[in-house]
Length: 618
Image (cartoon, rainbow, N blue to C red; front, side, top):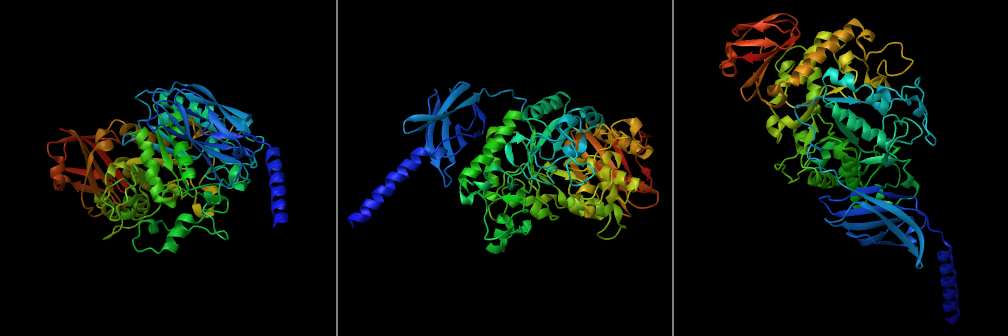
């Protein structure tokens, strides 16, 4: 017994010597800085460095209180919970890390003064038209950052799935093109670091939540882009990913704790069945595979039920809103994360920024499930998402189907009517973000089988129905691509965005005759929409389609617009007597698209496969 005690004592001595000899270092702290006067006074710092947990942090700064130090499974992390008083002044304070009463390392942490400009963080709304672009494929205006030191994926324009070199400067240099087109908000696919060996161009496998990918630019470049866009009347919507991160993240091989990721005995892919999140009859196994399954081998599934990770993600979002002064967020794969976490994430955003907007990607063609995820208090299971906006995937599908198929009892224009007749499901249908296609689907002109008349018909509906319309870059110049050929074919480079491009579609001279006509059509439609409060905010009154003719009205504070869609291959004369209720008091009209005036509203001729958009006049 005495011998055993002696052995233990010796081991403890050597263990102590070993611990004493272990070096403590500091590599990073996230968030890298913060602000005073935030509504939420709590701040959690994620500290990373070799054996940092062997140290004891100390802070001595008026109004900053270190209330808790949390160690985790890995010795290389510490989480520091701070409280920042209302009276705390902006400045830099030292976080000192002591080991055996001796200072090992220090970090100068900055508290910035919060910008209290009331015009910041006002969100996007129905007055906006959102332009979705992929920065790697839009324009390359800084060829010096095409390849960056330490980045695994290098530029290769011959590879449809490789990096092509587009960057933040490319977006910045073409803001005038976008304002001429008439869009008012830019949604860029993720710009954060994606240091993955291949297919890093799309941005959805993030490897640093606090850093712009150096092949796009710097954090400061992004902030400057937002400022420049604001001066030109453009809003910036940032794409974020809370469900997963890239397996190239520095923490991947040194997780703070094993439950940082949703772990499986072997790789398990999500079943992608979003419906199980709202299905009252779903078994636990289906739910687990949906929420905990990985999106892909290269995309580690984050466990937002780990409270430290949850706080990391929430603070990261608030950091980017405050730092870059963005106007909105698009949240990727919204229902794939734990829904209770997403509700908390939204509440924390709205606590700091009550007028802010987030649009969630909920990819299902069923209005009831889409409505489940938009903020409401009527879900049978009591779930309230607090999500301000949601994408209208059901409508995107219906637009393509309706314009391409023959008119029938439930086909053609009836698809659009019946879909909108389900708007009672939504807490506010005006807050739905409508679109015809995005970066994951066939391009819209291809969906229309490259029929220009069908293209105009679909675009006219998109820009005049309820909701906040979003278009996909290059749609205005009839870019084509089919998803089944590979994502690279629906994400082609915008012609003229690269110095060696032979054609420059950013200019009138560089567009073909058909492209110039399409651009002119979209420019006229979008810039008119900027002036129409009826189309932006008006109530929607729609009439049952008859013989391929679909008529609806938008009314707002005495302003009214009538839209007539003719979906058949023959000209039609439409008797307007059926629409007396909505025409009440209006006797004349002006065509938005043709600039034609109508002195009578008894009957109107509508060409085949075309639309009339008429501003009504008393």
